[in-house]
Image 1 (tube, rainbow, N blue to C red):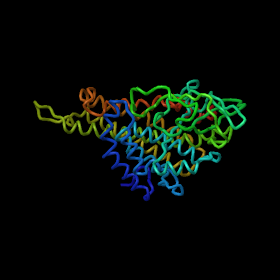
Image 2 (tube, rainbow, N blue to C red; image 1 turned 90 degrees about the vertical axis):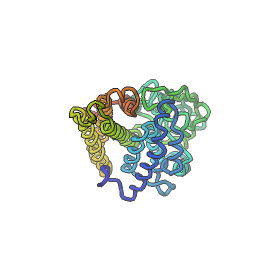
Image 3 (tube, helix red, strand yellow; image 1 turned 45 degrees about the vertical axis):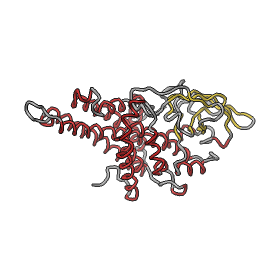
Length: 388
């Protein structure tokens, strides 16, 4: 059966490799990662060794050369096993795409080669304490100095904060007229003026190591800029957002598929001792399962349509990027809720992985752009209003 994301035949081996890695390494550590709220070290190490941190790095830099379709399929497999691992992977690839698109970053070539070799993990540091989930509107500013720029910022909830080697950051350019007049730049973990301010103890995605990063008087050379001054917003909306939306949508559908698999297993294996009948014989439980399956495949189909749009862009492509993220996030919340209800006490007590998936699914609801933002953006687009 063809892959729903129409993965290029040359990339199917990479998807199969990710599926095996997810089964043999990622899934084995997922429960402990969640219980301990720890970084999925084993999973990220396996991705490094397999070369999958360079999945979407061009072959000319030593990467696998995978595009959005391969990215979606691999992310979905990772999320079926451990959504925290998938979250780290999505942020890494989204930041890597900003680096790859840069025309100003002096270390661009070296960084891409390091990422392809599994020697560099990167992430995004866009949202700020002052603008919260409105990641496109940094309140921090770059100031010109004799040898480049200086900046200070309070970056909120940076995924893999303690483990990423670099952060793709945003700030208003010198003399900016508005927060949208921004610039992207790169900082390294351990740079002077860069510190991580806390740890993560969230409801879901407990292993994604999301923590605030404080930047205090950090110095930037011209070669540290990922975009030209004032060109940060187009990079965020036209490069980062499509990759992030596809990745998080695939995370959500992977979550759903994991919830369905756990529900099917529970309904088939669990029996009433006094009758000998299995839970799957109850029509109300089968009806919930059917709804879960249909909703999941609807979200996957929309993601597939969006991937087609991105491959052949049109005026409607940005709308589909927003819609696929919204659809997948809402579906993950609804499907994991139905899984909890269908599996009852076994799910509620934590004897099944469904309770963990239920919590993980809710992280996407508040992750920028949030569901509220997505609904407003889609409504604005449909009625001809500007996004901002």
